[in-house]
Length: 265
Image (cartoon, rainbow, N blue to C red; front, top):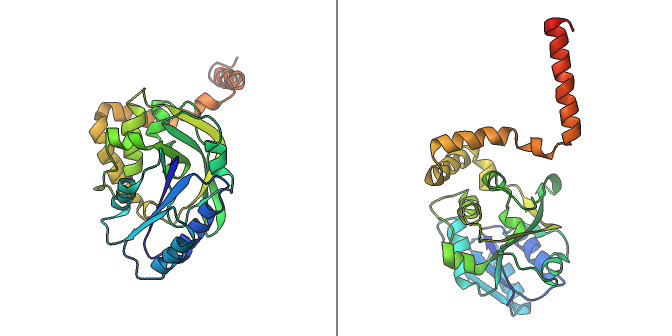
């Protein structure tokens, strides 16, 4: 089994149906689909059972959980694929050929990733383009999105699963721990739109909690002095993408204007 697609859901029957339809439309079929339902009281279980009648590769459970990452960890416990991918209720693949583009070619990275479309109320409002050969600063700034990343399952066996005590940033914490501090974990980028991420989630409804949890994670791995450096670098990280010749020209013009103002030359 090449891939385990894990979907978590709670009382989102309509959104879950969209996600399931997106999976079923994939032209690449070497996958299992694992649905972890948090004990929904709407029609979610009916949707899952209808899907199960037509799909022999489906695994599912409906029971109470302790939150998003506890549910994702339950999915990982049931996964047998070489890679794992999280496509939660409301999120959909960007097109029917996404899996084929990744798994019909010889890729060997531990983390295979692409681009992510961000949508709200059915309209695209953002676009997260993957970073090829990311640095520590890129990973610090959350360049890997779990909705656009296929994760080799053995990494969870080596580094552990998600920290379920975190409500919002456990996926970022896991990527930081695994990819930023271990050079032997290989990353491979394809310029492919992987998924559409529905932004109506807890991280967007609770920005203060997101800030607090992020600080908690940073304190685990970095001293406050180091954090201060990377906070400063974050403000100017886009400078490296500038056209260097134009940047130098712009700086020279600024110096000339300053000299004219200061010294009248």
